[in-house]
Length: 74
Image (cartoon, rainbow, N blue to C red; front, side, top):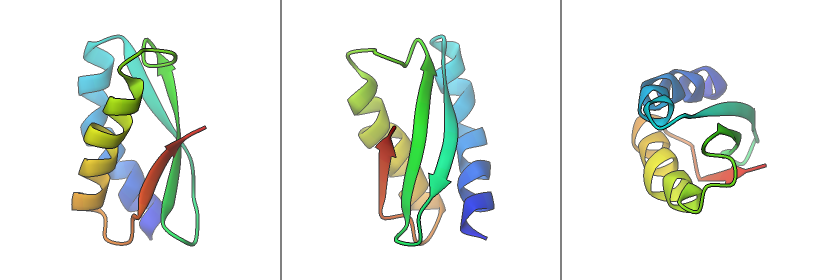
């Protein structure tokens, strides 16, 4: 199931975010392959959060989980 695959991939990403005082929570995966996450801790409101989301989290999820089309922060 795609949601489980996304959650597993986020577990791989999580240590890097936690090292900077942040974290990520999976909110939902839509039928269109859009992954919605909530950035937490230092990531919430960080000026680099958009780059982390697109260049980090989205890139890794697209590589590791077939069917992921986009990652959005909610």
